[in-house]
Image (cartoon, rainbow, N blue to C red; front, side, top):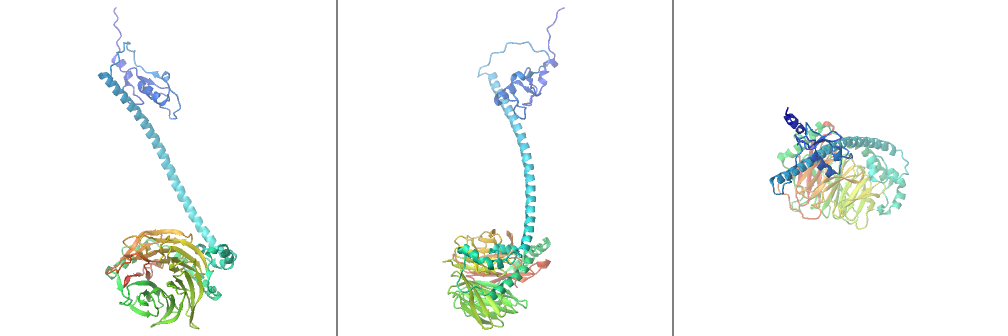
Length: 599
């Protein structure tokens, strides 16, 4: 019988082509091109050998990239009987169509290999990113927990310090103002015994006392007042409002909304000074009377101070006698009587008793240098009135008026470094710290307990400080300069560093004055264009903008811009109550004193 040659069936001839390459994902593979690696992966022989030549003979399927692989380790896969060997055709030339197809095939293989590497790299990157995100989330949680624990420890430590400072030996030196503010204890007593050594060790901060130091009786009265006031202000320092209370103050129907809409949304302009004098409000102060009335004291170029009853809308007194501009004013209710202190450019400090008329009861010339700030000390009584005054010549004077002899005199005078030119000042609410700013941008903090300089802060680097305001909680201090490019800076006295910055803006213009509200929750800063109120510790959040109506006066391009801004009203949202708030502001170059929230 004749045997026919064996012919592979269709199934046998296509068996090899049913494999899929693990590198390229292509299927089917050409006959004789399918191989399997020792790790069990099926690939195109050609594609795998190309990959091995690129990576130096490393198994591309090894995740660690250390296992070697060569052609001898590959096992060829074949389905059915091998076809009869034939003579391979002669290689085509570079210009033939088969040559072009071969080139395209090589490029295609290279793209597949690159795609494979890219996919592996993408998968690895995804795993690394997932791990990094998890680690970041865990780190954020740990940091949050550590911060919470740190704050709790700080609170406990502060409580321990408050209890322990009172029991310290009086010889321990605690001269830094920041420590007194932080601990809220009478650490000034410590320095009264240990201050001599510390002053000798640091002569640069030792004050030169021209007259005798503060008499013991006056110092005792001032210290007793400090102890009382420091306890009372703890309520303000610990004040925390609920969201409902905040809404009642800052909401659309809150206190500040009413402030902006009162008087049909316009400011009330009151001309207090003489019309024939140069326009300008150089100083402002606010006093709450014993009868519930509220008074605003204004100083101007007409050489007099005006006491205006904001409750009734009438002038209570015109205080005359100064021979130059009145640039500093302050007042205080003493035994149901209003006393007003006035400082002028002629270097004099005058004290008035305001009843039905303003009566001059004392006057003294400090050192023939213009006065930049005056303040009635809270220890004052009907019989003894104590006054702090800062002069442009670089001195701080403590004055006393005694009703028994009707004499007013300087009892202590402190001088700063040679050549200092003071431009603004403020007294701490407790009365034993006095901060003075100079035209070179430095601020000197005086400790009145020991009559020494407790700190010197670099505030504006060569630019004048024209306004300083202490917060009622005793912790924060705001400073401003009338230079247009200078921001308002807020300091923490406990750390003696800046904790807030209000950048300058054309909307406000040059800032003439700053003032904290009685609850230490809001800060008002007044400029040539308008007055704004922002939230303490959230300085960028403005809750109220009070625009000036009518003529704004002639603007000064440079130099100091005297003026003032004061708070008035009652309640201020304390204890869940509502209340009424009004503001008053004025500056040099403008005739009227402007009121917002006053009908």
